[in-house]
Image: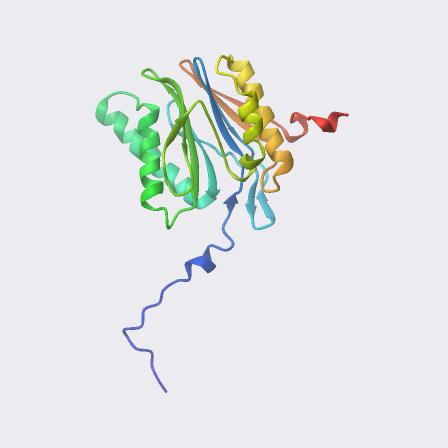
Amino acid sequence: MQHPSHSTTLTPDVSRLKEGEMNLGTSIMAVAFPGGVVIGADSRTTMGSYVANRVTDKVTFLSDRIYCCRSGSAADTQAVADVVTAQLSQYEMTHGHRPAVHVAANMLEGIVYSNKDRLSAGIIVAGWDAVNGGTVYNIPLGGGLFKGPWAIGGSGSTYVYGWCDATYREDWNKDETVKFVTETLALAMSRDGSSGGTIRLAIITEDGVERVFVPGNELPQFWEKA
């Protein structure tokens, strides 16, 4: 009878372990307007072809007036967001003031990029600070940090880039921006099988954060109305 060698190393098959992980195959978005930002997402979480959760909140708190939207692996993105939330809390205690949005974005990008071979995480960061006002940053899968007036991500984003390019205006007020984000997410959800459910928004301004919930039966309709 042979006994296994003590030098044998048991290594987990990571690809097999991750086959059934929960995935935020999703539609996420953030848009800046004069005075703040609107950030939003659908609410469907999938495990393969199975919808594991139809009312997930993908709009995640990071710090006062800073939120992010997550796409990719639910476990990976939540872990990254939790780490950065703790780091931002420590930053505020150390410096005696709220962190700027770019501080949170750089923290997230550093983690995503340095672990690009291990994590499946695409993140949009948005918020308001006293220095820059409302700002939006996009961190795609694998890392990188891109600032812009608007950002979209997730599997549903491929269906609406042209719509965003043709429709977006810099001088929109808050209500017009909320309407644009809601309609864009609804369009993405109507075409992308990995997106769906409801829409959750956060409107972030100097005055604070307002959360908005759009039920699935109240989503904007387009050609379906005919």
